[in-house]
Image (cartoon, rainbow, N blue to C red; front, side):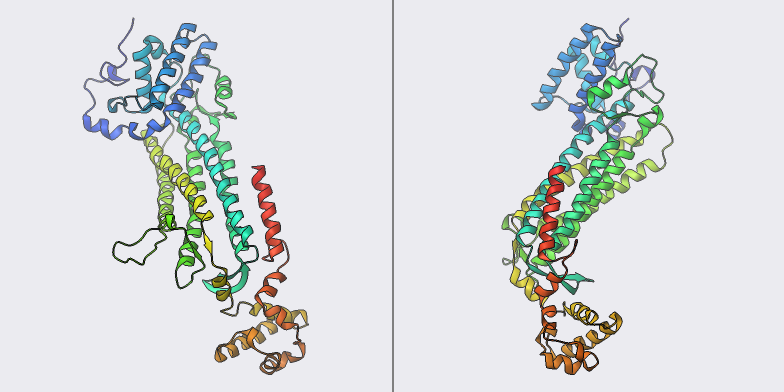
Amino acid sequence: MTFQLHKKKEAWSARFSEPMSELVKRYTSSIFFDKRLALVDIEASLAHAEMLNVQRIISDDDIKAIRKGMEQIQGEIRRGEFKWRLDLEDVHLNIEARLTALIGDAGKRLHTGRSRNDQVATDIRLWLRGEIDQIGSLLKSFRSALLDLAEQHADTILPGLTHLQVAQPVTFGHHLLAYIEMFTRDTQRMLDCRKRVNWLPLGAAALAGTSYPIDREQVAQTLGFDNICANSLDAVSDRDFAVEFTASAALIMTHVSRLSEELVLWMNQQIGFIDLADRFCTGSSIMPQKKNPDVPELARGKTGRVNGHLIALLTIMKGQPLAYNKDNQEDKEPLIDTVDTVSDTLRIFTEMVTGIIVKPHAMRAAALQGFSTATDLADYLVKHGLPFRDAHEAVAHAVRVCVDKGCNLANLTLTQLRSELPEVASLLGDDVFDYLTLEGSISSRNHVGGTAPQQVRNAIAAARAILSSQ
């Protein structure tokens, strides 16, 4: 006997005495956003159908019809000709209904041995796996662009800040390498997250598995999954992988936001360390002189958006009993928007970095302010036998003298230094000024992780080696 699967346009219509209200249809439908999963849904369905055929659960004629129908549906989706229907609720029922319309009963047999619960869990993992690979590639390009800029400015002196106050001189290349470290960790987190994404839920069915003699290993191999979810309850209800991905994405955006803040500050005319290419900026509707760094500003704002998605996913999961609940439908919008936001941001920042105009003279002038080599003078005294705390106190006194005189430490003569610091006068020689120059300061930090230009170049070479291995 053959029954009409969609008599009232729902897969479960025979159970209910009245149709779903139009308001509920709109409220519960996910087709507006989960149609992004259409191609991976077809990929997973074909793998499932192949397995059903090998296991003699569906016939050879069925699998041939399913392949042919799915091929047509794939074409319709790629060409933008597929008719998405709100009354069919989601991507899965839309594709199944179209398949059944094309090939008849063979399309109805496709869902044997599975549920939408394990189907959607599989689709999300398949889709996210591909997006993680894409984000990894985008991170690689971005890191490469940052390395190119760092290499160009391995010797360019920049004031290093703590508390936004001048602290010690560094090089601009060294400063950019700090972001290379951040985005390298982001890449590693994405690669690690991918391992837990790449587990197959299909075969868990609704929550308890299925009585059909399925072969989950075959499906996993066909779809390229590394592992099979071991517990059917967990398989359909787990969204840890989505939370973990979004947490990793939030860290990427946090690092982008930190860089954005510096770009905005550096571009300010009162600082003037850099300029951004015009194509990444906008003007003002009222002030004709304005050039606003909109791209980094917007990236700061979008960071809050991704952070919000992470909180949303955690909140969705926090109160759910096992196994699947409708709450999980709310995972897709934040997940999809997170992917889009991170991907778009990395693309535009990679291009923007290549167009940064660096102004070394402004950086150097700023590094000469704020007594950035004071610590070097203290280190000089320590190397000549003075305990560090006494050296610290002596140099603090010298700085106060310079503040009163309106000069820098390097502007004092040796006689003036000895006069102002009689307690350590015997330790001060002509070579002290080698320590008070900006070049002398950065060159003295010649160790792994230091800001000496040669160490910067060594770090860039090491970072490129890591980049090429990923």
